[in-house]
Image (cartoon, rainbow, N blue to C red; front, side, top):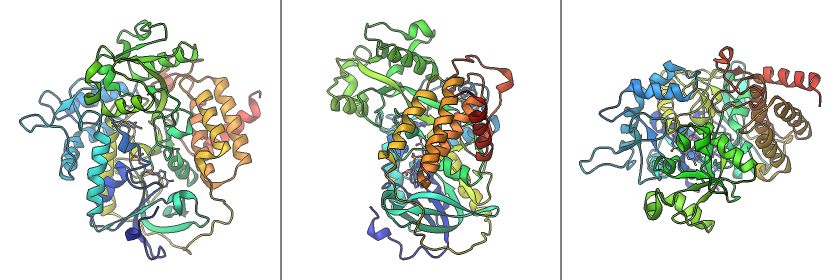
Length: 532
Ligand SMILES: Cc1cc2nc3c(=O)[nH]c(=O)nc-3n(C[C@H](O)[C@H](O)[C@H](O)COP(=O)(O)OP(=O)(O)OC[C@H]3O[C@@H](n4cnc5c(N)ncnc54)[C@H](O)[C@@H]3O)c2cc1C
């Protein structure tokens, strides 16, 4: 797993900066920090195990002649359902074009027109054409290929692949390093990496749920680790479901990109009825959470849901959407002539580790970027293609922040750590993990109620009592934070829908801030007061 030419001789010295995760946020931050020495620790080989490589749409940036930063901010604020942090959003949007130029310099082959100008396309809920893409649905793959090549050319960046970080080490006020388990988390030995600064870029939480579009490495370890180290977590209850994951029993579920609906594909049930027209005037182009609930209701009722692209895309499917086409063919579905079976799947986490405009968390020495964070720019519902933008803008801001100031860590004994109290685990295959994923989908999913959330919190506590392994503890901590925050928020807003409180409530027009200690207290109250 570990490439020999990157194998370090010894980890006993102090690494300058350790970045946890080799997706877009981690790689971009490392490049921006160059020539400062950086070590990237990644659970999977770089380019694998990262949502970034799977992005099909592209990156949003206000760059077309008719577009303005104000319009991009306004669309983001509207999508976020009343709790977007406008200051952070303004910052992100204003720096978008410069970060797109950085990506071009690193070699990303964004699509251009015959005059060489960037081609900008439009996605749902964007009022202008502002998505930069690569060859239809290949943006993520192309961006990652270019950045991986740039990182490999940069001598100051050391890449260590197959190391699963299990713990952020806190000494007093500071995070002073991390502890990781080699061999994709299978080694019996753990390795310590003392560092002057740690940047958490470990991605999302999709695999906490039974149906997701995310790679399995996105199972919420980063949020859990940070919460266990004492960091404040923001908005954990806001989970975005993609309405059209391809329902062919694959884990993770392949995605049928939103652009298909943008191009006129329609959603029908097994009787051929176009059910979204009964639910919202915009039909298939209604906000993602509304379409997800529409699809969910059809699937729950046993009627099934299908994305019919036969008329809108038809024979152009293979060249227009090569990734989706390949996924369909692998399941013996020809989307040129057949409707695609779809199901909502966990796609993106709006919540995460609370960070400020410099990507600083609430603990000294710990920065965070990308999907693991909650910067406030997504509010209760992410605007499509804003997540890759957020990853690059805040990764670059972190590099500036770390260049300017460094905490001085108080170091105690560091070295290889046998991890005697913890067996290596294959998290994705373990029975408790499977139980947790089903529980989250059933009780903390597209539609939630007080009853389902109370049940989730009780069963999470039981799973936690029966399984004290460190990696599982990180994962289950994140599940607990999501369930507790979802129970607390007695309203429906954006990605969080409560069937027992189906409307927005003005008193809840605010973000959630939660520490693990607070979540533990609330979970204990549920155990004491709610009937089993
Ligand atoms: C199918 C799909 C399509 C998408 N399309 C778009 C799109 O078109 N536009 C858009 O803006 N967004 C899109 N998104 C969302 C976007 O891709 C992600 O939000 C973004 O890529 C996250 O980047 P990241 O660097 O934070 O995380 P990732 O790219 O997921 O990288 C996380 C890294 O952390 C590593 N890691 C995780 N845990 C550990 C650990 N414990 N120790 C060490 N390493 C660890 C992983 O192996 C990986 O290297 C899409 C997501 C999916 C799944």
